[in-house]
Length: 160
Image 1 (tube, helix red, strand yellow):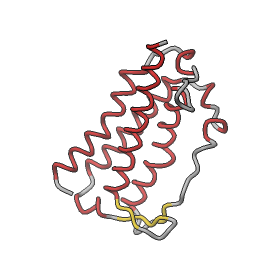
Image 2: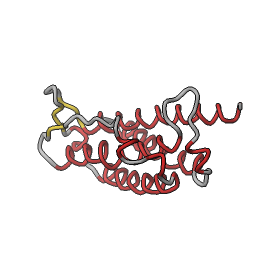
Image 3: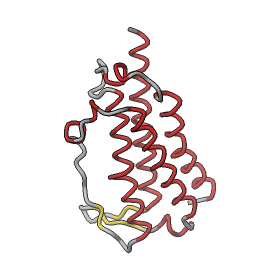
């Protein structure tokens, strides 16, 4: 991975906290909980899903691969989280602030990692390898998917 690729990836990861704060901080709980027509999750669910993926899925995977020799990356089913964790009754601003803190910590870890550390690998359940760079790219893809979906929800709300 080149220095430019490294910087670009870290910049992509740094965009999500800014997007969440600028777009959703202070939004009414009624609007955050409103069920959109063209998405299967309200905004508050997206916010808590992002927060929990940061703390329970992507962040720990990246940290493990950086700190352990070839750790096993266990698949995780996140489909039950909204109900199990009561996303609909939770505060959106809290999700945003916790996400921001977790993402800043992860970016700090990635900024201090040496270039060869990005080539460290974890082993998936199917036996294939995934390196730190690929894990971080997956996280950036996950961010993009939720940004697009959340923007589509906002657009829907504006058009009503």
